Length: 470
Image (cartoon, rainbow, N blue to C red; front, top):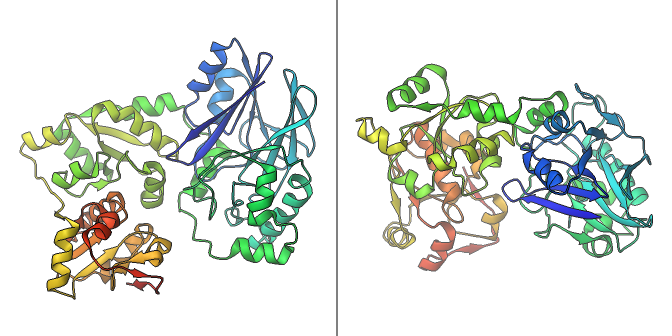
């Protein structure tokens, strides 16, 4: 028996390759499926099953393409309705894979069809559970992502999750291994651990949701308290996972359309496409195509595109190093953005050489900001980190505008003074700067190095006080 976790840090997502005696199961595959096919072929094995723990909201699964290419059966939990051929497993149904078996345990709560898959080894002993978003390490899945179901509420789903955990998962042995669908950084939970594999016994000890003496009422309150609104692209990803999508090879081919500076400019003006610059933030600051949006490949690229662009049908034009082009298209497709219509051939250098207008982002060091604050206590600072980061430590009188809500605060920014923007390390603040500049706000200055550099510069910071918001 072989179990391999294939973890993708940008999405904080875990897919799984399971092999026994020449037969393979894939759990929650990524959009690009060729690596799974090649793994199986290298071992002279056949992919028999594709198990989906639920209809994913934060990424587009590769189940449809993988089934088309391999003939494997797609397995969902009870009640899942799809536009393609799939098996709806019954609660407790057993699927044989080589010398092992996988049992479907219906665990509704995150969504109605959510299912945990229990792997039994060659001796029939419980070995591992693949929990999807039902059970994370240190947390459980949020119950507010499946709202359009008539009279069922978030609290109803939270109650179902309480029962699922106690009736299906907690009775299992402490030695059972837990393989979740997500880790720290995912928007599908609130407080996940950085680890990606653990024993169920350890989770019973330290995961608040598995506390033995917790009442259902306490669980519901704890689970639903402090939930941030889910990203707008989530329901669009669910729709794609239910209804199907284009083959990723076609998406890649369509996106690799090289455009001269003249054709690139014409496409941007005539199609309504967003120009997305995915280079490093330092390169973007030095020079970029006017009104382009920066979201760099070196950070949490796909989730930020989803959170800020939102509409997966939006056409995109890329500014990207050519050796990173395919990577950018694939990572966009993972969250449903299949409409890349071309890229700037030769990059910003070609744009500049063609005599096209350029823009840049003014940037200062944290030391320079410190000097400015000492000379002028009324300096206007915008902190685009999450509220929890801001509450931990921040510059006194800094205004907290989390990046995810930057578009709703444009009118609140002063027009008669400089606006200094920072995040934790410089990635999010450059995204915010690009969005503001694309909206006509140009009196902004990015603080290089973010809050880490700010603390090192000697700027006084405040602890645990209420946020100053706009």
